[in-house]
Amino acid sequence: MEVKIEDDKDMESFPMRADRKGKVGGRPIQAILQEATGQLGLAGIENPRLEAEVLLAHVLKISRIELFIRWDEELPESVSREFQALLARRARREPLAYLIGAREFWSLNFLVNRDVLIPRPETEFVIEAALRYVQGAARIIDVGTGSGNIAICLAKELPKVHIYAVDISWAALVVARQNAAYHRVASRITFLQSDLVSAFAPRFFSKLIDCLVSNPPYISSAEIATLAPEISVFEPRLALDGGSDGLDCLRRLIRESKGVLKAGGRVILEMGCGQKEALVREFQDQGYEVEEIVADYAGIDRVIVARLDS
Image (cartoon, rainbow, N blue to C red):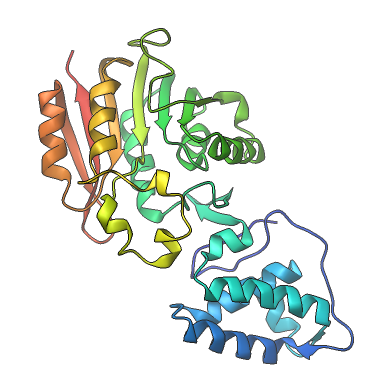
């Protein structure tokens, strides 16, 4: 049974546990959801009814559809208390994905916790770009792999590719390994703790990598405090903070990637709003040709693709 984490899709549990059917001594699902919707609405949650349903379905280990089938069923107090505890955490703006432990990305399900950034739809443009440029057998480095979402999606889409998934956080790598095992691609992904590509150059794989992909930290330090609490309070700052102008990690990646890429190899990076011009100049200064700029669903330049000149 798979979890669906997008707002407009049914959501189920990941991983699955035994179903719980309340029989006596509690309140009906309908009344519980009505009250929970009000609580989340007062807390400023954008889709309070949807999220209340997701949380209750998660506690019961059933699909959202089953909630409506069991509309008048009374829940025991123990189940209601568990639900109320999750509800209180969501009202304090802890992200829904952390509460249920999963997020959908590229139509796949990923375990997430507070050690990793929650995968976002715009990062799928990195996957799409990589699929356009990587052909046949190749070696790819995914820098700052987090939950492993980019590396795992590419491993599933490109069966002849071997991927090196690196992160400076050991806790993040634990999550990524679990996800790789769940999706049965662990044999084609090597996980390494590394500060960017320091684990590779100059001793290992110097000039042997075909493509480097990354969703690096690119939010300026000052901007982080202005973001929604779900991000600024709960997501790992290490995966967000790109320094005073948001470009510290991006600049380092561009400069250090030359030590591992083949001639003609590519760098595919996710970037923030307004960063395109600075990154184009940086790539050109480092001997790259910028091949493509990809805008996201909101029209923001989100992904940059550059080729290392031969």
